[in-house]
Image (cartoon, rainbow, N blue to C red; front, side, top):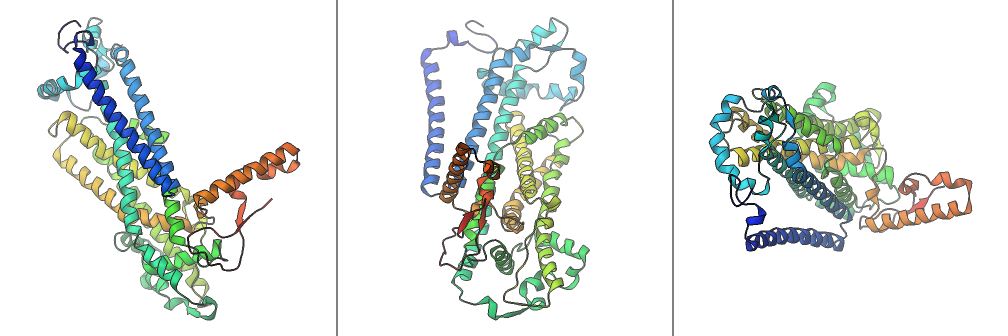
Length: 485
């Protein structure tokens, strides 16, 4: 294009001050965003929040991936738009019917003029028409897809961060329970506890709740109201301490639990390959008349309710084990954490499901805002109001319930597995242990010892808790450890 045309002047005929001004604004915004992320990282390191710093690094990786996708779309949009296909192929699997295309033309013409400044001249239609074919994807459609990917990535990061923030606010009240336990002076060996009279057993395994079916029903409704009580926290905490660090009854379980949650967050904030597969599948199924996004919105809801019910039922199972084995116990009531209570004996599967739930919910909300901003609320691609409003309500409900109930439940119930999280060691201790183990492994390798194979795998897996006498440790650090060879 020369001086002017359908898409406006090219860069050759654009005033230099306009080019410099636009580039200055873009560079300034990018620089501010980069400095903000850098300052946030320094602040987290200053506050010894290594786990959240790693989550921030994960966000940077996602932004870099987003930038690379944007670069590919910008670099190849002209070539992609000139790939021609038979016109008959474009008449099927449409988000909007051909009849509704004419109605929305006026909106596209008024809105597209401001968006096509970044795109090349869309002559793909004329190029393919000359061959009696249709373009595979127009420059306009590529630009819309570009914006959708950006909105999706930002929505996922934002909603994941909000979920963690609100979930931690919910968990903060447990700190008072932890402080009261640490400040309590008692000797658990001198008391006799009648199991059926214990508050934890009465709340979790009594009455019709002893029947398996009613136990599941109770678990379903329990996730909505007061999902974790003080008795639950006290009993589960004691079970963890007695099974993993018996020699340190003053172990700060609350600090350990929050560190473990922060470490898991860096996995949730990322977008794994299988989540991109979900995106491609959902885009494929967005066919006119199918109302695919309406039905897809039920997936995170069903998964969330199922997951919350399962987590609540694990607590009931822990109570059932004690109640069925003992009438009275010496000392406090102690539950026995085990991987057997989790699906497929894998506690980490719960985190994967939370990852899928948060991403799918972010996808639903991102799709709504993208359609609303790009095409308007009354557009055909948005769908009927009777399908749009329930999608929004479900999305808000899932976000609220996951922050208010499911995430706090996961934070404590995930510690009821057979092993403990490596977050039991503070970040500085972890770094020291890993460095020490690697040096020991290198030293053995240099000597040509046959015992090198004993050090394979994660160094933290070679560490075990010593049954040491009680200490005055009250700062959430790990008990004394030793290396096993």
